[in-house]
Picture (tube, rainbow, N blue to C red):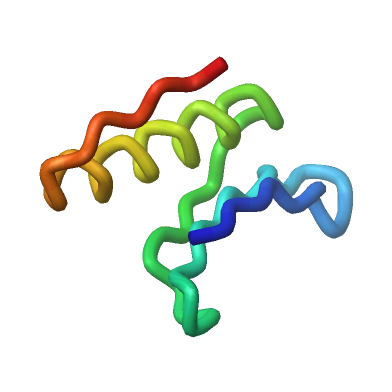
Length: 60
């Protein structure tokens, strides 16, 4: 999986956090108020997908 936070394309629009699976399909796409909020959403999404598969994700 890959995650990215896109900058707003113009003033007044939010950041966009996107998580893609290994095939490039969008798993999650949410508007977020900041880069930090987007990175937190990506981290939560990765952890949730790992937990669903019985894995434990540790963020350093």
